[in-house]
Image 1 (cartoon, protein in one colour):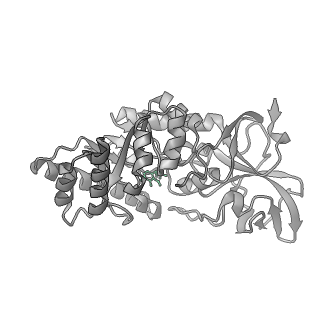
Image 2 (image 1 turned 45 degrees about the horizontal axis):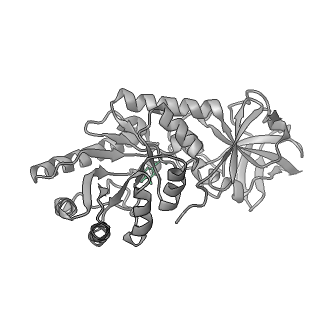
Length: 377
Ligand SMILES: Cc1ncc(COP(=O)(O)O)c(C=O)c1O
């Protein structure tokens, strides 16, 4: 049996109990509202973790890229949605994937939807599509205030496509300034999609699905009328940003980085986890959170390591392999000591390592390959 204390650092750790609790809690929320849960797999990129989510009741998974979906289909996952504007240039790969799993994608552009129709018509196949709606993030999605019915009619009428419903991602929720604003964003999202569905029905277009998904708005979206599917990704691990957004507590954060103090000077210590481990992502959220992650207080290898921040430590600068931590006040830390860091953004941290270590207390119980890591094509 391997102990945490035996692991070289830096290491990305997944606390098994906390991840399972996160999966169970969000599944219970979705089920209690009669809504399907389709976790976005970009956070873990692991068929093993996806299996836990499906065993708990998820209907399938979401992936951003075909390359990710290929890994999960290889592992036997049979229901995959790509809420990403996949271009029809990828039709041969998508069609090959459709032989192995039930696949759906989003569309939000007339030329792209025509391209997919043409590709499917040529292949004598039918592709399930959802129309992506811009609910305020202003990334992808049709403008609900422009001519959404025109686009829905085009999509519904094209051969080779089956229009399943509407889909959105309230990414702007990450910049909400208050709990109230998060609730407003979630309610507004449901309202925009519900209105559009009613207008579509009046125009003779039936839309079966309304899919929304973002971890910060999850708790507000679940009970909204009309929503049929939730697609949160980050919730499985959570991170410091979600804590700052009130979506999780520090105690819910399943992913931590185990790091070693490699040097100490007046007013600062240096850890061996730089931007190649923690990434340069800043924390977002209602509560301000300075620095590139939160150093936890207490013994890093202890059975139940402390779930409090070490207030004296701020990760103020990252080089590729160094974290420069400002020390204000007393610290017991000396070179060779180890700490745990809750990163700002767990999804990008897990994508930086070949495998994460599954831990239970002070024991390493498994090594989980991040199998879809780097599959960005
Ligand atoms: C289209 C789409 N759906 C769902 C999600 C999941 O959101 P979150 O990571 O906030 O759970 C994302 C995240 O990037 C996304 O882009």
